[in-house]
Image (cartoon, rainbow over all chains, first blue to last red; front, side, top):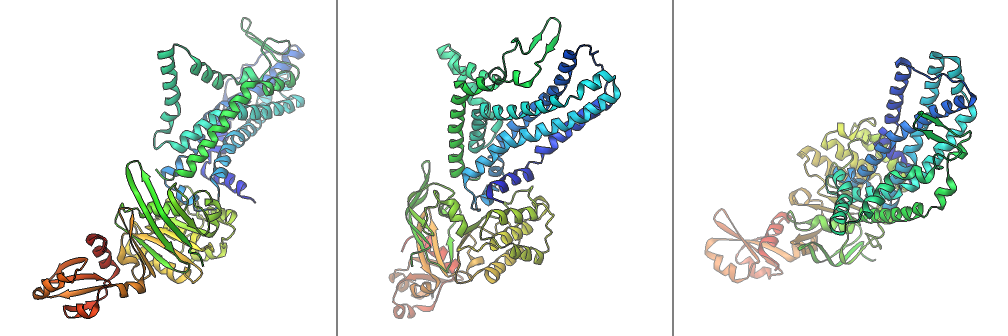
Length: 289
Length: 285
């Protein structure tokens, strides 16, 4: 087993929440499915049937994705700070492991391992919940939940979500790691204070809002860049009648060519790489607090 | 043979404060070197530089490498315990062994396991459940199982009780030291390491004030007990330090003529602790 695998294993030892958190969250959803009030729609057309099945799975993915995002943010902020605070960095640095390997292992855990574990938990939970709901409700609903091709398509969607999230949020992750490697205390404060100050200064003195717009775009813009535009022929949300029509295939839903050809994707990634290089440099020069 | 550690004009500043001020030092292979200085003298900074944990100015070579840039490869041949009890609270003893065995090519697992069995520490314990003394034992087990050429210890027994300290140094000398290894140890408690050392480096205010072997100390330094009536004659011989104890004076000389001094009173070689105090209070002689 090579050093990088050991480093990832180490992260699992230290951060048991990587799997405990999705497991507990999944458990709560299962309990809700078991004892909660089930009020399911009557599914009449095959299209409704299909939409319901897909929405069911997407809902699970989204719930786990939200929990995962919060946890991954916290994990990154803590990643290069915790061992400086408890001084155990002096132990880790006494081993022949480069600072680059250390930083990269933590980045990899945050952007790939945590999301993958999370989506696996989402699948398992959805499977159990589908089982419970099928038993508790009418046959039509049960049937809608068991469409093997939908399940497979969702796996494609999860992989796509992991990849695009990792690339899109690279600058955010890089910034969090930089703060984590630099701050002597109050990492959470340092993570948002500098951007906030920049934003205020710009509004105040220049009257423009480039920082705020770019930050907002980065934090919330992923669905717009990575998914097909809503209202296109493949899917749409109708606010008036409160209905959602989903495409027959997940491939109409995602927009990989749009995502990968968007300059925003790659400018952001480049900024992320610079921030990570900065975090590595800080890691080399800073030991305990 | 090239020295294991060689520093020339090693300087480190923290803002306006100078932690290391053009320090020069050399450590040869097979020695047990004590880097001794008062708190804030620059000991820890010097070690951090040697171990590649901090940036510095000047020239520094450790095992033929430039520490900051080549820390990863340096740590294959060197190991260190920087202070006690820095093992993370969440780590289990068996995980620690597994991890080091996994990433360190020169780690001998059987040796670590044997050491821990002797210390009666279970593998399933987490560091947070262990006493400071036990944690030190674990750290020592991990570090001593590495076949390293250089072993650096920074205040290794800080915060340990006398029993744990004794165990620590006994293990170091009996189980670890041999002629292929070099140990560099910092402490401000000189008495504790006095009998262990083969070489001394005194550091004060970021400068090296003495770099010598223990054998040489006996040739170079002498202390004379001078009765009150001979004190003027003693002072005329230019001691670099003078100390009053129980009505008589103890004068310290460096590279002085022993025959002349013998007429003043009884000669003896100062202990490392006394020499340390003399050297640091008397200034550079």
